Length: 360
Image (cartoon, rainbow, N blue to C red; front, top):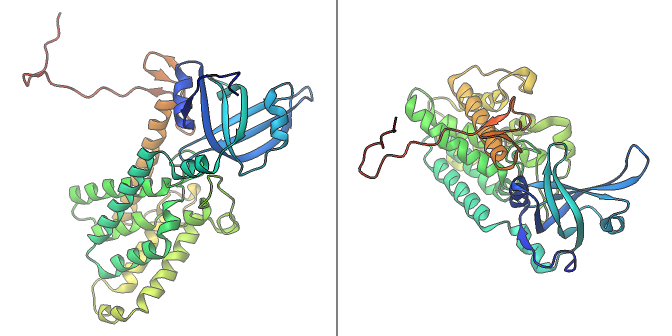
């Protein structure tokens, strides 16, 4: 490796993608093999397609039959941890493209560092989880705060390493925590702007709306390769989330303190049903997987907050990786409907406190 690339900067997959947008970059990238597939070209020539993942993103490597990496791929297996060196570029047809790449196994220390994730990401996700706990503690309804605390106590570690999706948005270890925390910030702002909304119910709905993804989009403690789960395949995260809430609700009502809640208003059964409706309706439309459309103010608020955070995450990621088409225009990122256009720069007042005049 040193012969091909004598001086290499170690980059994450996201950093490599961003650098390749600007032009050719030679780099060392650490990751785990998520998938390894032997394919053939139209001419019948074999090649390997390797999906590499780290804490933030994924990349696809192709090893053609005449490339040095082809023989190495014969010895690889899914879940292997690799150090990949190569020349990376960006093309409209394939996205990130790696040339002259070679690979070797990571050391134990390198593997542990990779699993921990970049320091900035670790810090952000820790802060997001702390914000979720703080928001849960602010809930006034003892049934909802008790339910949320049960969830965090029983499933907190699982929650912290789950993704919000397999692709599109927050598709990384800890992505679900990031998604839920940002939704909570938006939901709290909405509850302040629209005081008629049931703030307690909305916070609980945000926490639980994607709780089924702890099975549908779970990542193992020792890797970034997201396995497929039979429960997730057969039921989907909405159904699993409803089942989870009902299970935790029964456990909550069996606790000694629950005897003091019998006469609380709204009634416990009303609270449970309205929370379940938020989970069932959060996709907004039947065609998008919700078994029922939103029918309460909180259900509509949750749906739009969920959709907004997903879309803003997609467009932010797109700005970092999409190929430029013209000044301030980048190519479309699926599933967004059109090309990306750079946002308007925020107004900056002059040092004296007033805006700088524009010359004629």
